[in-house]
Image: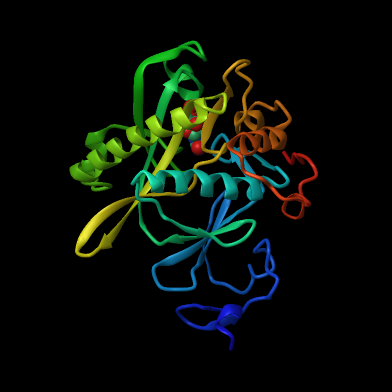
Length: 281
Ligand code: TMP
């Protein structure tokens, strides 16, 4: 079989259609390892790799609100590829290996650390609610928070002692996650400022991987308008998933605007399935 036309999986060789553009047509052929709210992970073509597939589905408030934003997966795939590549260029280890097609990227298989890191620059969301603060107020310094990744428990806010005591991450890993997160925040804040966008807050996920007898921490998951709060610098217009959470409409247009300002071109052929937001409650 022509190597270019096959995926060699751990267990078998599977034929892949020659003109596979959006990764949907081969979904049934590969072994699915995990399905989340916005992404699917498949076994990758080689050991130690995974295929991360971006869906159009979305959810909020711990799955209580669900919807479909047509074309979101295509845009998020490109935005996350762009931002992770930029972070890789400044030396942040990321799971991204390369984009495969419209909706998929090849990523390193990591042992995911069950802690979500949130970095905040401006008061918004749960920080405003928890402490009765005014949304939009700049914070005197960036705040790093940790949440335990558990949908059943509602992803509770945790402190560093929980993380080390429960063995979710070691002290050294935690220090590395904090230092990487602050570096990512500095870099992305500047990058977004340059295109007239405030990086209000964002969430990051990390995983560990043995490399040459060394355990290293890699940035995982995605960086997209699903995982960040992005406000227009002049108008404070929301260009992120809060448009879905708060029923503001214009979700897909907002995501496209972020891609446009980043200089990401979505060629006609690739965006032809983008017809406008379709909300399913
Ligand atoms: P929060 O203000 O709701 O705690 O959210 C903080 C940031 O984390 C915000 O940019 C959105 C992101 N986030 C997610 O990506 N997924 C989630 O499930 C939650 C709760 C927040």
